[in-house]
Image (cartoon, rainbow, N blue to C red; front, side, top):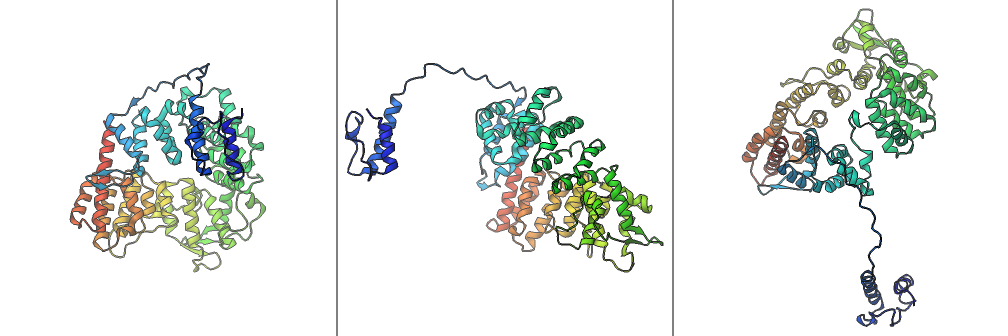
Length: 527
């Protein structure tokens, strides 16, 4: 007797106009329940009935597979009940308070996860699947989410391929939980690329020499794009011990690998590449005889030695070739050489006029020199130079302006967190929020009370000037996540002053509600 399901499949594939429906009979005992006058509808009805008949006739398995071993115990404390309910709400998209719509709660999730992880909590078992789903969709959540999910998260990930990222984003294990050498070697040689990068990064963090040895062993067989990201992992624990390997990478067949190796070497002031760049920099910039000018003589050619040290002969930015070579040399030279070369601290050097070696009155190279010094300060994480390039914190008053050479947000990130907040608050008091978005992004969150006060006062000035809230949408979005909850009262006062139905009234009401939400959220995790 033909299989009814196969007959239905064949009819569906060929079409009811080319293949008639299965004939009534023992193979289709349900045939009397369908209307054969409409063949397409009848085919679907027959398929549904056949499915039910098939399931009804299924037999239980004779041999049961053994139940999997349960997840390992997690000794950490479970979240307080209030915090667990808050997590469930944050994993949704929106919340309300007092009838008003808050900010997108998903944007507060990273702060909640980081705080809960710092407090040493584990996620409730019932919330782990939703937490892993959220981390799957948003990669920036993965380190904290995986840490909070703990052993249960890893156990679930072994059974759900959608969560395989858990193994790749696993948090750094404690020293006593290090993998055995054989397991470590297997992961490096057989793991997925992302797993290998994570493994190398964590190993470099604990044992830089062991990580270098691991990479050195497979380096010749790695793909160029993989070698590039493996080099990035060497930033963890970078030291002069890595110099021979990086010097060899300067001859790599991939120009991106060569450039990355050169940049890493330029962050090591004692490296041979840094010394070569220092020699070129001294030839390009010198102090005038009277000590009043810095005289610039940019390179006239990009010789093979310069190219090997990571300086492309052609500018990828469209700048003039000599300006490009000059900037690359200065940015890669150790910043310490300038005080040693001239006897002047960074503040004095930056105050000097910059002239051409041929024409001291020309300031052609002034901007190029400052921009290159700014890049060097960020690359070498030199706080003294970053501080000098930024200049003192702006002072409110007519005619005052901040000197923001280079990328000020990047220079600001080199400074200690407290100093960043003070400088940014002064900038906002003087210049408002128009150019403050990137500066605020460089500040640690939550913002300090003085910085929060400066932001709230700037928002009040913007509202009073007639500006529209959406002209500050980027800053407002950041403010909802980073403003100190202690500023909630001041924002509520602004909301009360503004007409409720106006754009600013609604904006301040929403911001105040979000701050109160965050205040309660953080208090629950501190319990």
